Image (tube, rainbow, N blue to C red; front, side, top):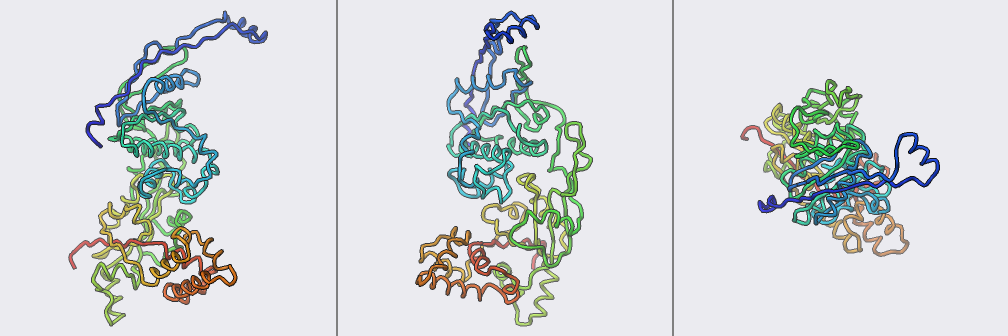
Length: 472
């Protein structure tokens, strides 16, 4: 961020009163008399309370419900410029999928913000915003607001009332940590109000404004002392079993279980962790898992990365050499609640440090938008398209279909279903040609819908990764 941005400060002097007139309703008057209230009262909520926020800072307003937290937020918004309110009302009417709600920037940038805001579940990302749950919609609104503020390139004050109040405690805790990372060092200032005092240490606010009922507000500086709540970054990595992978396999979408595995590493939710005075119920779901498997016999990216070292004429000798020198990170799965917390990077680094082979490889369809394997120390090799895949993509474009249409499959099937359609016949021939090159006979026998499989494989662009522990 430009250093000049940090010179900006939002400031407001808050004066606010509540006027309670003499009740006209007889029953209200009776209640007033019972409690000794004369009516026509004026309560000073804030009397010249100073609020100052700089870019990269978080200021939290807390206190019991009805104390006047929202009043302060509204008054600050009235006095300062360039304010983004965190609101969900527009999303409740939006038919756009969640990933398309964020405007501008690359797909990788949008997915990063969505993940940091706790919306990393693939099925949620492609669901219309109006069909999301209340908690998912709140996290999408937060991602949209922060992304819009980042995209302006200017200092922006983001205001969030009832921060994370619709989320369960564990999700709120993880979200608070992630939001702190997003705001730190950015041109964004964040002013939030919450009655949930237990998540405040996780936000690591630069200031806390505490507003009691019928008392003056008090401001404290940066909180000191131990942090509370679960900290996934501190959870240890342990040897696991394939059952740990199966527990999270529903969050892995592209393939079934690995055909074989050598080792499994797992990060479990800490059973000894205390969340706000209560023991965390960890259940059977681990937070993240990594599976190490033997290498596949033939991988195009490997031939590129190793100059065909394992593609010699003696197939048996080449496979023996491959198994001696290479092992594969075949699965990395992180529970959606903990995505964006760095667990995948930690697991990959651990797997590299404890590898039984000189080289470790991996294939990732998400490599172009989520390069966690590179951050863990692996080298990326972007694989050129196979000739038959490139030909199918060109054929689809020639008949008016985009890559997204192939991924969705539906537009392809509608075109194929048209009778006497030359475009449909042309595309069908290219699909069949690609299927012959892409799918083995065993795969074809297992598949219920070969067209869908070929279409989706064509638009997936895997990145091959390799880490060398020793020189060849």
